[in-house]
Image 1 (cartoon, rainbow, N blue to C red):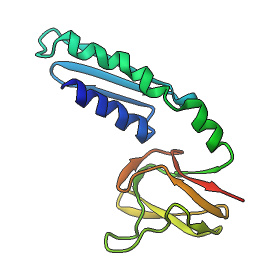
Image 2 (image 1 turned 90 degrees about the vertical axis):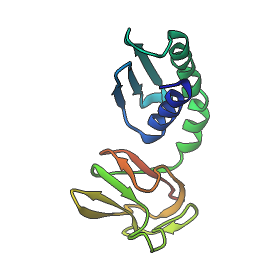
Image 3 (image 1 turned 135 degrees about the vertical axis):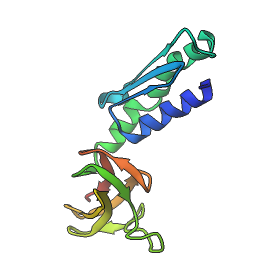
Length: 161
């Protein structure tokens, strides 16, 4: 695993909302922990002696992780504070469309009312419609289509005004 792959993995985990990811390969062990408060990100990369990767290649990724995490903590927190977060009520796969050939339920800028379907989450081959609990305007979609989501993971930011 090269430095670029490790950096991409760190970015993916930070975006996904997962709290901890462990990856063990034959020559490298990687643990990535994200803290919910202020966008903290901790990365531990351990090389196993038989590895073909040198320690110099792995060490920079561990040093770069904190700078990646600290790029937007305070500014993003202040901007998002005025919005209501709609979170996932279940674990599953997030879909923005009812089927591949249909349009998305909502887009950024869409006005929603209480009870409107925002997305579906597939759990154990059942598609669960996620409805809005408030009225407002969609400001941001926080999850990519066809991505796995965890319980209580933020899905949308809504401006209730």
